[in-house]
Length: 387
Image 1 (cartoon, one colour):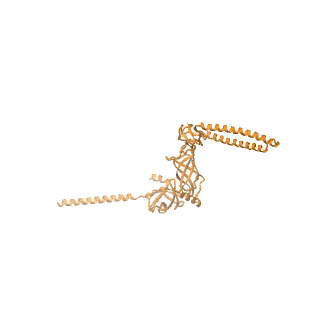
Image 2 (cartoon, helix red, strand yellow):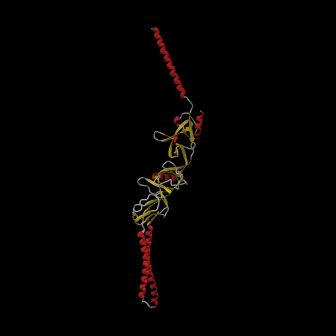
């Protein structure tokens, strides 16, 4: 039994020694795995440059010209003279109102004018004769005065009848309801046989000129004031271009740029914003009234602006922006102040100087003061591929 006990102790001792050696081997392997060279990072050297600043605003499209067609005389619609959705020309007849009563009124006015003209002619001839006879004493001065007054009265009556005839002609012409502008006409609100009245509230149809399209954009008054202050202080220089680019609802870019027309002079009391209006050519009719769009317009040039990739910026616990620089003794954190985004980059307003090397790749692997191997951003992929 003593021999068996000794053999068991010996076996346990050998097992303990084996476990100890195994643990030491694993620890050594882990330590070896943790050893290595400096971390490779990529950096960019920042340089001040002129940066064109743009603003993206949302807005709605509206027709360049809109005309709601309404009758100017009352009557029954005899016929519709257009196809819904077609292009109509200015002055083109769209509806024909029954002209019978207006034609009769015109004919009556023409007859009344002819009668007045005949009466006036007779009165004028008599007045001319009396004017000659009064000089010789053949007629009294009173009879001559009466003849001259009658001639003047009949001439005035002719003028009244001419005005009545003009009114009748205008009303007769109004029975042909014409398009005020050239454009695309929408659906008709009435059909032949409908009774319409002069200047009624309901439009018969609407014609819209879509050769150009307005885009109404909104910008907050605070942003507008800030922009004016930056112009006044010289931080921003004004651009020479008033062009506006448009992004449609499906994300595509409208191929033709537009022009900024004006900025409203009144701030909307409800929204605190002002309206900017741009106009875009629309030769193919792609833009339709009421579409939601996003417009990008130039609002100034920042001279000496510094741009860095958005991925190079970290946030501290308080929300402040920081970047890592390549320093003499390794990575160095640097707090910065950010302006607006320009594409996929941040515009830095303070905290960086010309020539600073900002780490843009490998940020997750570095710690302040740790050894690094810094290479220019363009050379980083090649260096990693060789390893």
